[in-house]
Length: 56
Image 1 (spheres, rainbow, N blue to C red):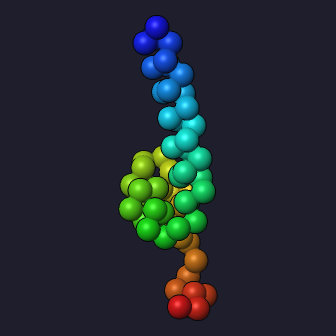
Image 2: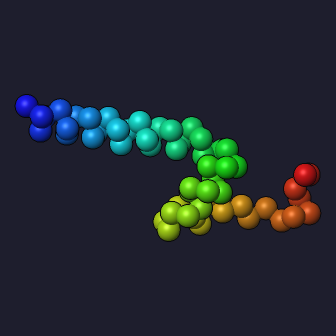
Image 3: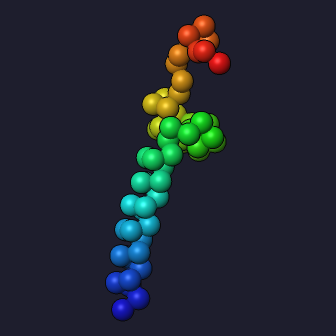
């Protein structure tokens, strides 16, 4: 019985974690501290905007 629950909870946990990172990926703190440190995602989330084009 617990194997069934652990599989289900694992799937829901991965789904919830993915949703959180998807929704918070626009937040600079999450992008800088988490997403840029993941080897396959760092090139996608790296800011390639030149400094002269940033207003702040």
